[in-house]
Picture 1 (cartoon, rainbow, N blue to C red):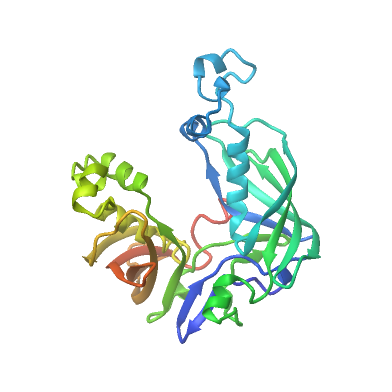
Picture 2: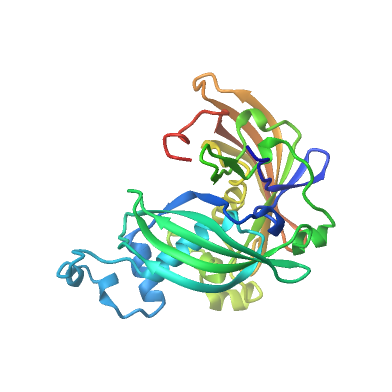
Length: 351
């Protein structure tokens, strides 16, 4: 088996930063990458994609009309399938600059609400582009939960070379030799590489610090939607006129929404989580305004075996969030159940 690829940069002693994707030099013609996780789409996703893009083909959102067609139900928007498959593949290609061309996009089977999409990518070509970038030729095949190929996408992608990614240049760091627990893929018996996210209970050590990347920017629309859907009637979250008068023209993200985003940002390192047991000592140091970005950093405080769940352990972690200027936004301590090595649903779910 080949040495697995790593998805972290070592910042200091017991201090690591998430950095997904392979360098251009790590790709080889003939490699096959099985991307995980998959993604289940709903008819709501389908209708919103059609309506948001002003798609007038009623086949995507008029169930009565669609029932009279050969499909008998609303058909998935093809470009929604394209977006999802490229997104699913993004962890392996996270060090890309951009996609330079789509050479062929073939939709081979229909997609409907309720289908789960998976993606597998093959490297079919590799060439130098410039000092900073190389170009890959990639074929990504999308399959549904039945294993049927629903789309094939052939495209070219520009990928940063070793130590040339803007983040690495800014930090002055590059990936060094790291233990296997930091691997972003594992190699299957057939030679394919399958993506994996998250570190098992045994491999998380007290005192370790993880910087989670990427961060997330809060938009005005998100501040409004998350407040309104929660029956939150505080004007600062959704009333732009109020914001113009009292909060310097910027809507404020509700505190539970901020907590949810900060927690979600940790799920790449803590991707083996079973369930949250609770949060405590939650501190909201300053309001989070629309337009601000949040970045997360976690420290492992303690760990112990679960007495009632032999296949799981319990982690106690402190997570801090700061904005793009380095100002502290919020922090909390959290306890959660996490799978032990080799256990959990992964094999049964083809992960």
